[in-house]
Image (cartoon, rainbow, N blue to C red; front, side, top):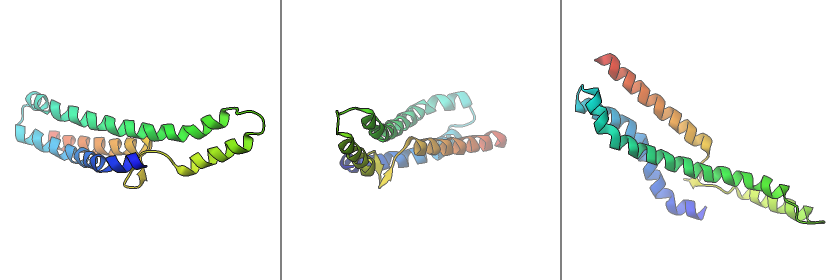
Length: 135
């Protein structure tokens, strides 16, 4: 959690940038005019930045998902005779520590990243559909 607290301000800034990117993308598309090919060509850097930020979310969520698999890994190991109680104590300690990547005291999971991506894509297609029916 200490590493998460150090990187939290930057990660929150990335979340804000990613959230604002869809309306900015649509606004830029309107400002650049009706030539769709030229407009999309000019939006490539914006889309690459959005892909890089999305990859950051996925990597952070993957760290949390790896932390959830550690207890089952330790539970499957054999430490010799008479070590079952110590192993169970270690597994319980790891489960109760709830290791992972935290942002504002919320554990970032792959499910959260997926839901955020789905909502962003729905908003993007909603704005694009509205824009295409307008012209």
